[in-house]
Length: 210
Ligand SMILES: Nc1ncnc2c1ncn2[C@@H]1O[C@H](COP(=O)(O)OP(=O)(O)OP(=O)(O)O)[C@@H](O)[C@H]1O
Image 1 (cartoon, protein in one colour):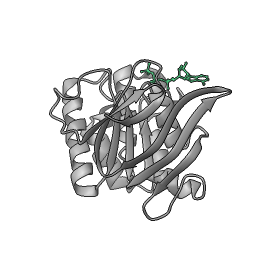
Image 2 (image 1 turned 90 degrees about the vertical axis):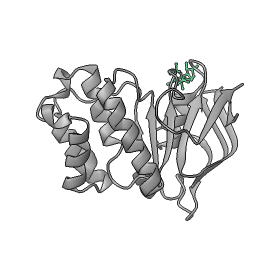
Image 3 (image 1 turned 135 degrees about the horizontal axis):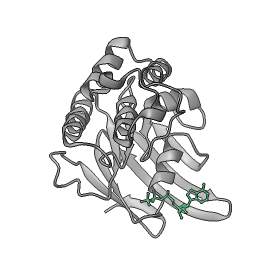
Image 4 (image 1 turned 45 degrees about the horizontal axis):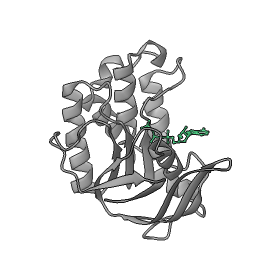
């Protein structure tokens, strides 16, 4: 479980988001909020990509600020609109992220095959479509032994077959590996076959349970 206490994020003097106290047990959480309400900022902060105030801690005592490497190994993040260096291939990205996350070659192959990325494994990112880039980004988020997987707008540009693959992977990782998923989507998640555990809202610069 991840506990968030007295979280706040500012850009300069401008407060973007606060979270007073939130406990995220394994499950699938839908983070809802209007455009510009701070969802992506929260996700980047939670992943350790942006500095923030407050305490982010796992129940065994690992915190972002005191154990930055171990914490980051446990939190995987797929950006809404992923961008990678144009000259890198899907294979090079998979091997690189796979190594940093401690993913076996078998796991790397399984997850890339599931999304059909093996069909364009040697293609440089600069020659990939936006849907292909999205699949690469989503597959990379499942590498290693994450405790938290954050998927920012996972459905955009994704074809129907890949949505099905994603839904199955999310359910497997939640049910078999006790992973916590944080998803943002402006599309209706209720209508997909994904079983949600809870919905969180950003209102008045505060993220909390509905
Ligand atoms: N690097 C930055 N510097 C300053 N302000 C920023 C920066 N990035 C985002 N913001 C501002 O922070 C606020 C939250 O943006 P954020 O991208 O987190 O929102 P969001 O909820 O993900 O929006 P959307 O649903 O449109 O993707 C917005 O007012 C945005 O303009």
